[in-house]
Length: 127
Image 1 (tube, helix red, strand yellow):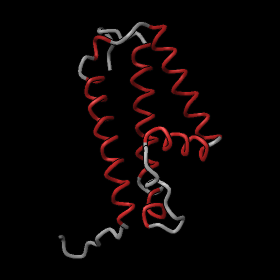
Image 2 (cartoon, helix red, strand yellow; image 1 turned 90 degrees about the horizontal axis):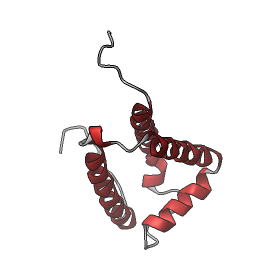
Image 3 (cartoon, helix red, strand yellow; image 1 turned 45 degrees about the vertical axis):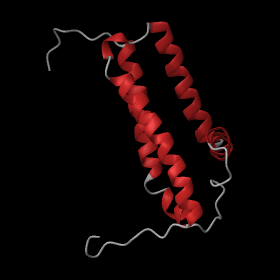
Image 4 (cartoon, one colour; image 1 turned 90 degrees about the vertical axis):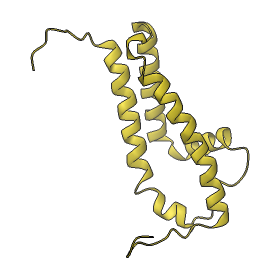
Protein backbone atom coordinates (compact mmCIF):
# COMPACT_ATOMS: atom_id res chain seq x y z
CA UNK A 1 0.00 0.00 0.00
CA UNK A 2 1.29 3.41 -0.94
CA UNK A 3 1.58 6.09 1.69
CA UNK A 4 -1.35 8.44 1.56
CA UNK A 5 -3.50 6.25 -0.67
CA UNK A 6 -6.96 5.21 0.33
CA UNK A 7 -8.35 1.74 0.02
CA UNK A 8 -11.66 1.12 -1.73
CA UNK A 9 -14.54 0.51 0.62
CA UNK A 10 -16.56 -1.91 -1.47
CA UNK A 11 -19.09 -4.23 0.07
CA UNK A 12 -18.90 -7.96 -0.54
CA UNK A 13 -21.73 -7.63 -3.05
CA UNK A 14 -19.88 -4.89 -4.94
CA UNK A 15 -16.67 -6.95 -4.96
CA UNK A 16 -18.50 -10.00 -6.34
CA UNK A 17 -20.10 -7.90 -9.04
CA UNK A 18 -16.75 -6.39 -9.97
CA UNK A 19 -15.33 -9.91 -10.33
CA UNK A 20 -18.13 -10.64 -12.81
CA UNK A 21 -17.39 -7.37 -14.62
CA UNK A 22 -13.68 -8.24 -14.78
CA UNK A 23 -14.53 -11.50 -16.53
CA UNK A 24 -16.47 -9.61 -19.21
CA UNK A 25 -13.65 -7.10 -19.62
CA UNK A 26 -11.19 -9.97 -20.16
CA UNK A 27 -13.51 -11.34 -22.85
CA UNK A 28 -13.69 -7.87 -24.42
CA UNK A 29 -9.90 -7.49 -24.32
CA UNK A 30 -9.41 -10.86 -25.98
CA UNK A 31 -11.95 -9.96 -28.67
CA UNK A 32 -10.18 -6.61 -29.19
CA UNK A 33 -6.81 -8.31 -29.73
CA UNK A 34 -8.37 -10.74 -32.18
CA UNK A 35 -9.86 -7.75 -33.98
CA UNK A 36 -6.82 -5.45 -34.01
CA UNK A 37 -4.05 -7.91 -34.92
CA UNK A 38 -5.22 -8.89 -38.44
CA UNK A 39 -5.91 -5.32 -39.57
CA UNK A 40 -5.51 -6.22 -43.23
CA UNK A 41 -8.38 -8.74 -43.10
CA UNK A 42 -11.25 -6.34 -42.46
CA UNK A 43 -14.63 -7.20 -43.97
CA UNK A 44 -15.95 -5.54 -47.08
CA UNK A 45 -17.30 -2.03 -47.37
CA UNK A 46 -20.95 -3.05 -47.02
CA UNK A 47 -20.33 -4.97 -43.79
CA UNK A 48 -18.28 -2.06 -42.43
CA UNK A 49 -21.11 0.39 -43.15
CA UNK A 50 -23.65 -1.88 -41.47
CA UNK A 51 -21.50 -2.35 -38.34
CA UNK A 52 -20.72 1.38 -38.17
CA UNK A 53 -24.42 2.28 -38.48
CA UNK A 54 -25.38 -0.30 -35.83
CA UNK A 55 -22.72 1.12 -33.50
CA UNK A 56 -23.86 4.70 -34.05
CA UNK A 57 -27.48 3.58 -33.55
CA UNK A 58 -26.58 1.86 -30.28
CA UNK A 59 -24.71 4.93 -29.04
CA UNK A 60 -27.67 7.17 -29.98
CA UNK A 61 -30.23 4.93 -28.26
CA UNK A 62 -27.99 4.74 -25.20
CA UNK A 63 -27.76 8.53 -25.03
CA UNK A 64 -31.55 8.85 -25.31
CA UNK A 65 -32.57 5.92 -23.04
CA UNK A 66 -29.55 5.24 -20.86
CA UNK A 67 -31.37 3.55 -17.95
CA UNK A 68 -33.23 1.15 -20.25
CA UNK A 69 -30.07 0.16 -22.13
CA UNK A 70 -28.07 -0.12 -18.89
CA UNK A 71 -30.60 -2.46 -17.31
CA UNK A 72 -30.96 -4.56 -20.47
CA UNK A 73 -27.19 -5.02 -20.80
CA UNK A 74 -26.96 -6.10 -17.18
CA UNK A 75 -29.83 -8.56 -17.56
CA UNK A 76 -28.10 -10.11 -20.57
CA UNK A 77 -24.55 -10.22 -19.22
CA UNK A 78 -25.12 -11.10 -15.57
CA UNK A 79 -27.16 -14.10 -14.48
CA UNK A 80 -27.19 -13.02 -10.84
CA UNK A 81 -28.64 -9.99 -9.06
CA UNK A 82 -25.31 -8.67 -7.77
CA UNK A 83 -25.46 -5.70 -10.14
CA UNK A 84 -28.57 -4.33 -8.43
CA UNK A 85 -26.84 -2.13 -5.87
CA UNK A 86 -28.29 0.33 -3.39
CA UNK A 87 -28.23 3.91 -4.64
CA UNK A 88 -25.81 4.94 -1.89
CA UNK A 89 -23.24 2.25 -2.68
CA UNK A 90 -19.63 3.33 -2.97
CA UNK A 91 -19.40 1.77 -6.42
CA UNK A 92 -22.31 3.76 -7.82
CA UNK A 93 -21.19 7.02 -6.20
CA UNK A 94 -17.65 6.76 -7.64
CA UNK A 95 -18.43 4.88 -10.82
CA UNK A 96 -19.37 7.69 -13.17
CA UNK A 97 -16.13 9.64 -12.84
CA UNK A 98 -14.00 6.85 -14.31
CA UNK A 99 -16.17 4.38 -16.19
CA UNK A 100 -18.05 6.66 -18.55
CA UNK A 101 -15.00 8.47 -19.95
CA UNK A 102 -13.49 5.03 -20.60
CA UNK A 103 -16.65 3.79 -22.35
CA UNK A 104 -16.93 6.93 -24.47
CA UNK A 105 -13.26 6.56 -25.46
CA UNK A 106 -13.83 2.89 -26.27
CA UNK A 107 -16.78 3.63 -28.53
CA UNK A 108 -14.81 6.44 -30.15
CA UNK A 109 -11.93 4.09 -30.95
CA UNK A 110 -14.38 1.43 -32.20
CA UNK A 111 -16.02 3.95 -34.53
CA UNK A 112 -12.63 5.17 -35.79
CA UNK A 113 -11.55 1.60 -36.53
CA UNK A 114 -14.67 1.04 -38.62
CA UNK A 115 -14.26 4.40 -40.36
CA UNK A 116 -10.73 3.32 -41.24
CA UNK A 117 -12.17 0.37 -43.15
CA UNK A 118 -14.33 2.73 -45.20
CA UNK A 119 -11.81 5.43 -46.05
CA UNK A 120 -9.28 4.73 -48.78
CA UNK A 121 -5.75 5.13 -47.50
CA UNK A 122 -3.18 6.18 -50.05
CA UNK A 123 0.37 4.96 -49.62
CA UNK A 124 1.63 8.16 -51.30
CA UNK A 125 0.03 10.63 -48.90
CA UNK A 126 2.29 13.30 -47.42
CA UNK A 127 2.01 14.49 -43.87
